[in-house]
Amino acid sequence: MKSFKKVAIIGLGLIGGSLGQRIIKKIPDLKVIGIPRRSVTIRQAKEKKAIHYGTLDIKAGVRQADLIIIATPIDLIIPKFKQIVKELKKGAVVVDVASTKTNIVLEAEAMCPSGVFFVGGHPMAGLEKTGIEVADHKILEKATFVLTKTKNTSGKALNEMIHFVKKLGMKPLILKPAVHDFMVAAISHLPYLVAVSLAGTVEEMKEYRKQLGILMAGGFRDTTRVASSAPRWGKEVASTNREQIIEVLNLYQKKLQTIRRLIDHRKFREIERLFTAAKKYRDTLYK
Ligand code: NAP
Image (cartoon, rainbow, N blue to C red; front, side, top):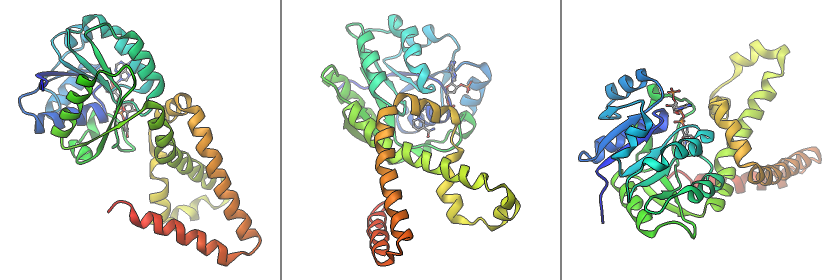
């Protein structure tokens, strides 16, 4: 199997920068070209050993690359792909890292000229902070890296990506874009919405604001952590994964209504059973 020789990363924020660092650490033969939008980011990325060199000229930057990683905010993935698609060399593989996949994969595949291969990607790791400043290859350690497969996906390009992901010390998981989107609606987007609504609910209890701040302990901090994620990310996820999010919100609403009804009707034995089932499930995770 062919190994990539040159990788270009478009967008050097938390994910692009962390991937760059990880590539340099784990695959030292691979040259990493960084393509951010500001020259200061090139300097920062070099200092953080996330790239070998950088350029602001996106077209020149991708010409020699045999792997191109697009790591910009979700709504810029397709515009960036459009900008580079005619510049790519034969055999080039393009992967993105966006948190939602259906629309991006559909549009990118429709734009791919022959000899250029698009594979949708999503590293399942992150932070509630953004930017090259917080990039850190350790967040990707043993993390799952979703790669999408459709009827148009090149088997060869997918295999090259699987090989690449494994070399990074990450775990490839092959999913159809729609299946990915439904599952991340449940395990990523719903937790964000729960954290946001929880933080928002308490924030509105204005008369207790000061005392609440003193009272808060680990439970509130842990449960609301992802409410600090970039609002732009939240907006893009809501707009690109709307139907799947509505579906899981309906399921969640039903669960909340059950809990509310049991408390309201003093069905405390039943509610303990519900808590026990949730604890049992949660205790099997993150082992
Ligand atoms: P980020 O830290 O904000 O990085 C985004 C990068 O894109 C920054 O380098 C930013 O440049 C650049 N950018 C913004 N606007 C641009 C433009 N108009 N032209 C060129 N570059 C531009 O965000 P991130 O968290 O790495 O997210 C990037 C992607 O990863 C998103 O698609 C997101 O869905 C996905 N993702 C995020 C997470 C997570 O936990 N954060 C996890 C998995 C996947 P500046 O530095 O100049 O602002």
